[in-house]
Image (tube, one colour):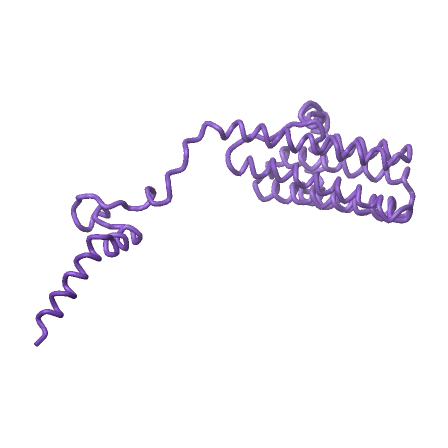
Length: 247
């Protein structure tokens, strides 16, 4: 929700900064890599127990993530390759940061780190649903807990040292988001015609001119013809006739 409502306005506000970075030769892909570096630093700070410093790292990585889009649009470098690099880097950043959370919680309990892994897995599922839907020509955006909401919730949890309750909330809301996106795409795809049956989709035996593809017979139909009741009766009749003709 936050991503859809705020990203457009924030991107417009960052346009002058993007223009300045583009003039000094800083590319969008370089900014994406810098954002990943901030995410790694954030994960290390969380693992070391420096939670409030980690909030700054989280803010820095999010700020750079917004800047790379502004630079790409300003410089005309927006491309499928850049979008792919940015999307993959976002997934790696999420996994790295939640990995740092898991490391930190493992020092408190052997079981609490499972919460971070569950949050990471559900985050990947939500992202996969959107990517797969867009690959099929559908829209799966939206939901209660998109990436922006996850980062805001994690930042608040780090600042107030409320990681465990925040992870439970993240797991519940991300699960609901996964269900929301599944239902959304399922409804969009419900108007598609039924797929033809396997043997109907192949060439059927019809009266057509040879060489046009209409005279081809599926292997199963040909086997049934050869092994059918009439064929067996004819084979027995020929065998009896052969025995009678013997001297």
